[in-house]
Length: 485
Ligand code: MN
Image (cartoon, rainbow, N blue to C red):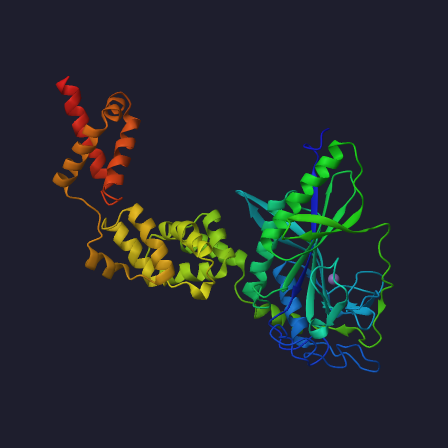
């Protein structure tokens, strides 16, 4: 068997900050540290000073339960925290308060799943567990990690609430891994527990191996796009080693997004020994059924439910519904526009292709988009009425997105409308056919070649000619030529 035929196995571990929380996980220190100078969002608890006591943030637990439910997990009725020990300057207590599944311990949730949709295929990715834990501080290097003469430490992030979400190794290629992270982020956004746009709000560690070979862990991937890039790079690297008869080291690698490569961090000989033990400062809490049920009842509509609703209410297929719903602001935009315009399929197509492309092209955040649902509804209506051609719609769209161009006014004042005047178009067709005798000869024997002449006429009219009328005129003229010969 060659490396090309070997199965690739990918599992993910995602750390998500609950950025909607006002305070940290175990102390009342404000959690919105991003704009602040280093070490200003700290208190004795998150600095790990002796003699302090952590008190769990109730809202964090409520968020975790909502996430667990949204990821179809079994939710524990006990809340148990453990100490996970390791020695590193970002961790002032020398242990992280986390959760663990083992005798006498449990995570807040386990055994869930997420449905993803990749290239027309539906797939289930199982969730192994969800832990609530605290974020460590941040080590800052001067320049790069290799050349920095010293390192600085910022404890603003220390103690911020995280969820650690671990999947089973159910993904087989980088596209599936990316689709999983996209879906996960969408779910968290719908729940309103995190803002994925914030720097460092989610970090992905990926485990990847070829079946039967050593497993490599890639640490700290910071964007959806980089999940796919890092895994694609790693597949190429590992495949080359296997094909040359080499051995895949079991190791941890670091993703360098600038260079687009992974580099070795450390070789893993054995599982690290974290000496987990129950945190005596945080005795186990029983969570009542009512407490859990109340949270579940107040959950908003989630992506899967919205996809179903879009399919029913707007008669969209699963693909279109999924693309729209996974980008929450786009789905909201769609629904607003759908109140004014009812060819939903046409609307969905415009939004998920050209509209989204221009938003990305101009690198616009949702709030910077100047186009409103009214703009798009008007544009589509003018297209339906035949006042604009599809080419004109494509041409005007970037200006609507970027400037909020009022399309009705524009058409009125500039006379930028589709040309339907038969005698005028007849003249243009005649010109084009005279200038292109070879194209005419082709079209006489091959009906498909007519489209080439239609294209030339469209070009000559800057895309404003009505293509159907042009086609009819060309056919008539070709028929006359056939009769004449
Ligand atoms: Mn963790």
